[in-house]
Length: 86
Image (cartoon, rainbow, N blue to C red; front, side, top):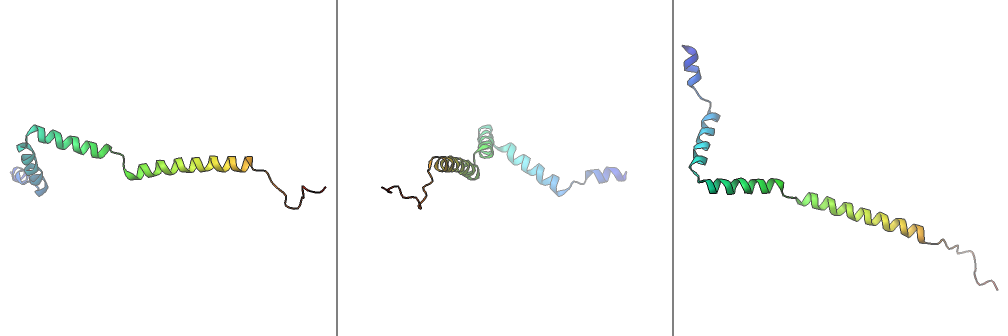
């Protein structure tokens, strides 16, 4: 008989969850649907951190291309050589 008495005692967490469930049940379906859609949109939205990382990657790629072509196309001019030796 001790088991039956122990089973009827609920934890405060379970009571709190039950109370929250009752409050959510009182809301209408459109409100619940809107809340669910808002939470889903917030979870899947692109954050500032991701945008910053993408922009930094693009900038680094452009800088690498620029540096490659700059170093490839520049001619080394030796200052000791005089081209006007006539």
